[in-house]
Amino acid sequence: MAIESGIAFQAATGIEVPAAGQVLVEGPRLRLRRAALTDIDFIMRITQAPENVPYIFPFDRDTHTAIIKGTTIRLQELVEAAAAASIPVATVGAFAAIVAESYGAIDIISEEKSTGAPVGYFLVRGLMNELRELEWTHVVVDKKGCGYGHEGLKLLKKWSFDVMGFHHGWLDCKEYNARALHLYESEGLQRQGRERDTLRLADGTYETLVVLDMLEDEYRQRQSAGLELG
Ligand SMILES: CC(C)(COP(=O)(O)OP(=O)(O)OC[C@H]1O[C@@H](n2cnc3c(N)ncnc32)[C@H](O)[C@@H]1OP(=O)(O)O)[C@@H](O)C(=O)NCCC(=O)NCCS
Image (cartoon, rainbow, N blue to C red; front, top):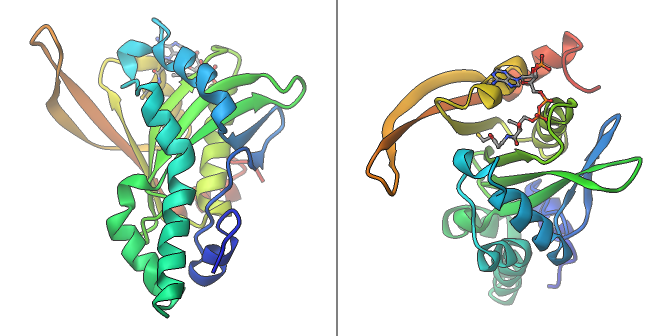
């Protein structure tokens, strides 16, 4: 069995695997699309910019290349292997969730609808997690201070809960990152705890992470209250 952009897999499991470059969701000013290999220069620049790097964990070019290529390729291999062995594709979904959980990651570009210019970057992980739990691993906005953080987060939630049907989204954030914590909490994410001194920097100092999350019910309540995109 051959699959194109995960469509057969989606039909069997309900989990969509977007193709590279595919538009995921659109808002008033921004749209999110799955990154393609041609986006790697932008991703490298934005994740290594001095104003962003203290708050995130930049990955190297090879890792982004693997992320952009990896999910679909690995999934396709699994589905084809299952078809060859006459195993139902839905069973493969459960298998993929365990074996390929760490590969269920995609790079996402946030871009202006009016210009097509990229203005932000997200990495999400857990796409093949059948527990329907998604980690919003990287959140970076290049064009800061003009509301793109808010709209990007709203789009990420809409895609996660409305489009993908996930149950739980979560992230962690350095405790001193006041701007990001403000953004997340004002977008309805709730603090669930702290991972104390969980990071050790090169100079031997430690940093604490705050875990924030949202459940699909909480998203629906915000949507009913007009706090999310329709
Ligand atoms: C955090 C980040 C994603 C926010 O994106 P953005 O486009 O600047 O966000 P917005 O303009 O939509 O909104 C920012 C809000 O934070 C507020 N803010 C700015 N600096 C702040 C600070 N030091 N403390 C608290 N709030 C702050 C703004 O006033 C604005 O408030 P509002 O809710 O009243 O509008 C972006 O600044 C960024 O990429 N930072 C570096 C990387 C990073 O920290 N990523 C998160 C890792 S967990």
